[in-house]
Length: 241
Length: 241
DNA sequence: GAGCATTTGTCCGTATGTATT
DNA sequence: CAATACATACGGACAAATGCT
Image (spheres, each protein chain N blue to C red):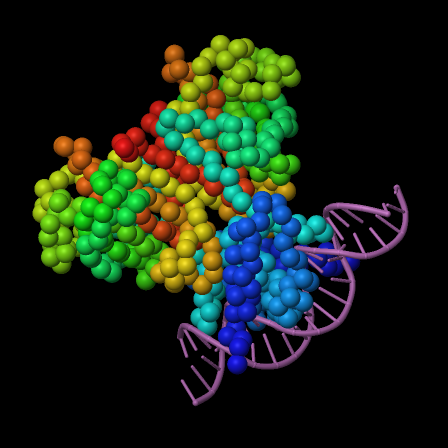
């Protein structure tokens, strides 16, 4: 009797219910533990953990172990401008953003079209990484026309927030005016940039900010966010209640 | 020399480039073929195909084989109300929608709040399935207050489009006024409803339609769409060009 | 820094189950 | 019913990353 060819699913189901009561980041039974506890081979134990990983319930780290994972909601809507710091902190985790570098480049195709500027216009390219509890969860490129903030590089050393620099040094009021969200399999450089082991779909969030007064584009950005770390929710339209 | 411990990734990479030139739905080398061609064991061949499946490049069907897969864009924006039929047909595939059933139920929590009606208000519950080339790609629940269209069940037998029935029989002009999109691991009933083999995240699209004239809510729906079949893109804001 | 145990990652070969054709 | 192809599973082996000593 028994084996219907899905032992690993039964095991995954059992573990999933047990996981629900554990705190985020808690250690989960490893492959070897499972072989002992359920009396299966390593293949089945491994398949069970991979199933939980597909369901985004655990995160597995080679050499370290398997740990309880929970996504953090990142809500994008017409009246909400999500700040990384606020969103992550509100979920009870530790946010952190690191500037990888700033340089001036000629605007390539996409950001030029978005900013409504001629191809090749000089602009600051800002590369950043964002963390959740020391987990690299997002990388972003931001383009800011040099004309708007000539000395961005220097200003960024003083203030940590790009938004703040734009307001104080650039004397503009950036407002998110357009945004596009989808899920894609990222190019190789993004995968290594996010230190992702396995290739999997990742959120792609593009957006454009304009100056509140003049209506002129002041910044556009393109961010990749790990889907196993964030649950991006897009809300569209206002007629709800 | 040789094995650096990632043979399967090299194989996946090689196959991925070859796949790019094949038409959607074309047959791909099976596990056995790969073991012969690349001189690896079944484990590595399988891992390579699973990698391609993670990248949404192939679809694997037990007993049948492995086939080239391509997602269809499903764009949701303030000024675009996507119709399943139009979207799928525009991508060169065959759309189809099947009504599973219509019954009158007391409105549960969520749709009641969305429709701004008291809990338990009688409403039609419409369950539908949508196909892309005979692949079940989406299931949806729609709630329509009985007061709006008393004889929905009978009317649906004559016309195939819900939108049309609402316009002609209900004498309302449904306009999508609110929408929320996210990606979730669906409950078990949705997984079996979508005939999904493996558990994986699926799009959840919720929306509310109001009457263009009166502004009153006339319908709300909740749809699950397979992420390996559709690339849902949400566009937000209008200030683009 | 070097060394070691732990844990997951990769891979082999083989066997059997199950769905499709 | 038979052949094909993917799904599940066993057991063993070594690689690679991590964390601790």
